[in-house]
Image (cartoon, rainbow, N blue to C red; front, side, top):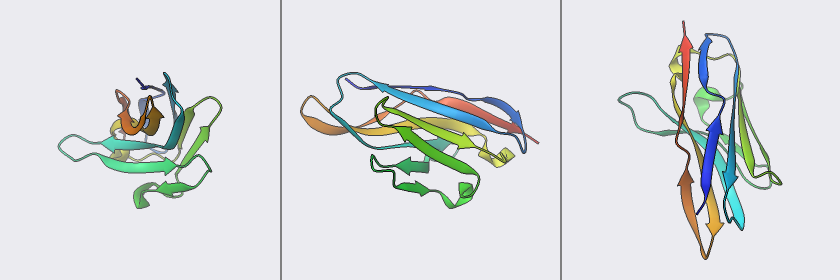
Length: 119
């Protein structure tokens, strides 16, 4: 079983920064890609950013130029540096990984971490 544990959420004023971290544990033979999704109250869960094991990144248009995703393959950890935060970035942020464990590829999610941006 693969477990994703997130940290780094919190309350910040508009214009501020936060850094999210997510570490994968368990018997994992491969992880590709890893990423972050977010879900605001009453809305669907949307992709924020993803990164492949080779370092190829993909960002939602709303966060381009403000957020940076990175990963440490050896540590099986993914990070999301969030700068110039806006109130509309307020949401629960979920870590995502597609991982090969036991005998197949499956999608895994973290428990979520709250990010609140005050105006």
